[in-house]
Amino acid sequence: MLLTLATTLLLAQLPARAAERGNADEAMAMAKKAIAYLKAHGKEKAFAEINDPRGQFTDRDLYVVVYDLNGKNLAHGQNPRMIGKDLIDIRDGDGKYYMRERLEIAKTKGKGWQDYKFLDPLTKKIEPKSMYIEKVDDLIIGCGIYKPQ
Image 1 (cartoon, rainbow, N blue to C red):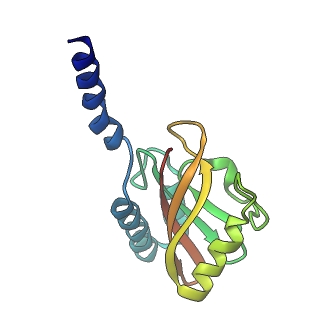
Image 2 (tube, helix red, strand yellow):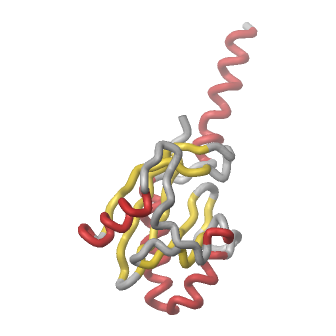
């Protein structure tokens, strides 16, 4: 009886935890929504909206980021301390130069998914992450999903 109750309580929490997280389709849709907003309203207004943690480009663990083609962060929906920083030499927890890889994907393919590790705003731990990125003129716009272990 006790085991059944414990199992039921655990299973009841699973959908709630999944609902806390965005999925790949939602991340791609949010990046594309940010691109459309940028094209409609210009960089200044788009960056301000992306930087607002209560704005339309932040949802649960999903948030939009914008970089120039040299790896400088121009907008960040989760961490305003990243804005203006040159991130070309930043590495993830495994030592991967993920910004260099991100720039390569954007410049050679125009868009795609990238895997790396980053601080999850929900767990406050370094977690596996996949980010959808798309090159738009001289910018890279992305939104990613966390995949806690």
